[in-house]
Amino acid sequence: MLEHFYHFLIGPPIETKQAKEERLNKIRALAAFSPDALSSIAYANQEIYLGLALAGVAGLQLAWPIGLAISGLLGIVALSYYQTIHGYPGGGGAYTVAKENLGNAAALVAAAALLLDYLLTAAVSLTAGVEAIASAFPVLWSYRVTLALLLLLLLTILNLRGLRDTGTIMAIPVYLFLITYLPMLLYGVIQLVLHGSQPFPATALPSVQPLTPFLILHAFSTGCTALTGIEAISNGVPAFRPPESQNAGKTLIVMAMIMGTLFIGSVGLTQFLGVVPNPDETILSALAHRLLGYGLPYFVIQISTLLILAVAANTSFADFPRLSAILARDGYLPRQLIYLGDRLVYSNGIILLALATGGLIVLFNGDTHALIPLFAVGAFLAFTFSQSGMVVHWFRLKGSRWVIKLFLNGLGAFATGLTVLVIGMSKFLEGAWVTILMIPILVLGFRKIHSHYQAIREQIAITEPFERLGTNLVKRVVIPVVGINRGAEAAITFARTVSTDITAVFVEIEPNSGETIRQKWVTIWPDIPLVVLPSPYRSIVKPLIDYLDETDRQHQDGSLAAIILPEFVPARWWQNLLHNQTAWLIKTTLLYRRRRMGFQRVIIDIPYHLRP
Image (cartoon, rainbow, N blue to C red; front, top):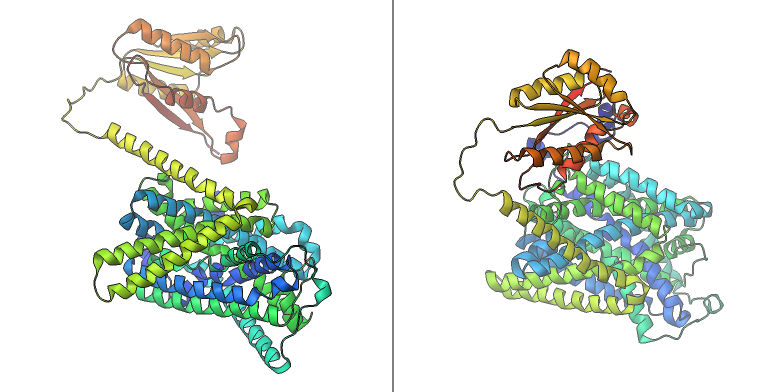
């Protein structure tokens, strides 16, 4: 029943040979990889407004120049990543580029920065989406955490269904957003041309802080969140249909042009039309209200904003699992993240991202403004490592027009590196310190995992010829039993095939219960001794462990007694809750005990499957 429900929810398994059929064309790829980049205008514009509004009207007059500066930075970064796509068609983005050109240390820092960026992108996109719809329906403000978690659950299920399904479904909100927002911005430009600009109402925005260079830099740094997501396509080149690099490059250019149009258009109209939002309203909601009123078009805009922000987290779901798999393949993350699930997606990475994102949403109470200070540091740090690595790449490779390529990536590295410093300094005390602290912690974790896998490889590797072991490996066998039953019978039957020295052990929890068992035991298995261990503290595991240690010391036969565990397996998963899992407790305890007397204990599990 559970299997049928799983396949209904996620879809039936897909054969590995169908992987190429699951790749994306440019239309679906734009929908799958661009939501974060396209929707970032929502929270980027909001943060620019909130930052400059502290200085009143004088501060808001700088929104347009700051928007132009960020748009110029967008162009530089887009051209730089276009070079990266063609230089590294295998994907991996900043991690792969840094690893091959700057070394492992830089690569791990870039990877940590990217993973944090993807995590924060998912959380910010979902909370901002809920805030967008709550601006139209204020009654929803108090339910924003619940709504964000429901959207997260839906997005997780969609991504677990696979690339093609995700790309098709994501196309709906992405293109709905474009066909509603772009005409609205065009209409706003026409209104601006016909009626001229309008000043901000002086009484609506009292100044609470002086307009200082620090305040301007702070607004610029928060506005730089508009660039997050620009790197997604370079990380996901293998998801495109052949020719991968060409299709990915064209999609990146189109995405960057749309990003620039949406961002500079919305920032410009907000300033030149003198738009000021209400307390429980976002700046884009106020702009839509100013242009469209409160009729049906306004609500369509707000719904499309919710949808694009909700699926913006899909950029993280597309790239976080892929980067995690690359790191796991290199031995820096758990191996479970390498493997594709039933639907040819990295299911474990998707689930890991969903759990971490849900935790952030709950921890920050669904507040986008509280999450933003942690944002962008990781993205721009990864940008810097990627572009710096590409500079080294072109310098080593040379080739056609390498000087121009080197210059473009060098310009990108300089611009993004400078932006990292600005963001780090202006937002440090507001929360950027958390991200800055987490990056080295993650790098240390990567190295710890890598050293663990390296130690395992050294321990299990066969480096010299070894003697063939004999066939009689088990000298003594101990079978823990809870009574006389089919499980004990199966364990004894198997034990007779591997040893002639077999002992059954019964841990007596209730006084005198052992003697009752013994009287019946000798009539069924007279040749198998039954040892009854009293347990005054009602523990099953400790008396058994003490018995094993004592008998091993007594025998001194060059080995430890093997344990054969009879284990009942219920027919239904929920039936496990009705049993005390004694075999599991014994098995777990013995499994994690270190070597005793220089030997390893053999543990053999004998399952007995129960009928429904």
